[in-house]
Length: 456
Image (tube, rainbow, N blue to C red; front, side, top):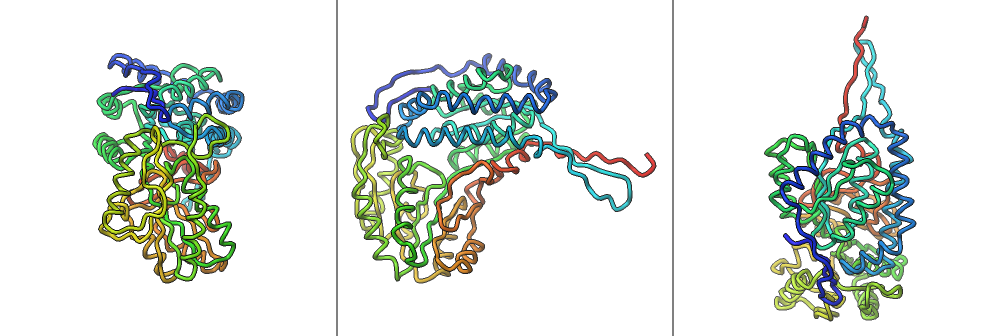
């Protein structure tokens, strides 16, 4: 496995980093385990101040970090800057709320005496991170767990090694002790060895279904807690024409941000009959105005995909749909570098790959349904269950639809945007466990009961 910075705009290999040796991986785990013994006993206020300093450093280095994101995975710098702002907010959120989230919870004991639930760290955690949001994904895992008192070893994606090193530098320069946060250019075999090691107490992975299945199997074999955030094919349900222009703007903006490479990007637009034609026309008009550009330029709003290989995989899904009768309104062609032109498909049927697979790229699919009940049935007819969006002027109907959707997150009147204080996660083949919000500090915590018996 090579860790490489490959510019997706030009295809040029800019830097290569060798994977860790087995000895280096072993040493990294030793250091993380040694640090875990002292880090958990470091006063909470000191841990929170160090994490707050990480947020401050992100703000100070925002421009250079955003440029590095654009260079390595093609995200326009404006969007990369937004990711960094959210990451800093996550660190501050846990720094601000760490004391409240870890406070003892008193219990009523029917038989007498007293009892509390104490929230304690469990030790070394392994985080396996993706490339599409290289800072944000780390923040939502590392932020709460470092405040709690766990230590983390990060195996980042192979195509963003310089961002991975820049993130490690944030923690080092903020003053965290060696071993609290460790970046490791690990091989797949080394990841398996780390999971098997009894000093690693939990694993979090954000990535593909295939990777999640492998890690979950390995973790289960060794009785390790695991949190998985996997794929999504989020429905975007439109039930009437109230504020239709705004709804279409939300739809197009949500789908084509980051070139469609987001788990919670709306991918299936499910629109009732009475609105369908106008929605398609407005959506198509807006897609036609999107122009790809150099992601390192401030004016660019749409950049390349992360790699030519990723682009070609999505293009194959599009071509399969068109060959089976789908209507191609825009796109469906490769551009320079790893660009896939913004693509719009309608008239999809179950025999097409795109109908049931996740399209991890700039491709929108619009489906026609009769009414709200049909929209719910269509939305739930998916192996995925991450997020969903519902647009409807009737709040009672919107709430009813939201309650019936088989997903982990529903937003009424907006896209499934991530915020520090709201839990994030899915059901079905989108994974399990939650990150962010108070729940983000509970996944890898020992909820210890301390009871004082009557007469003690």
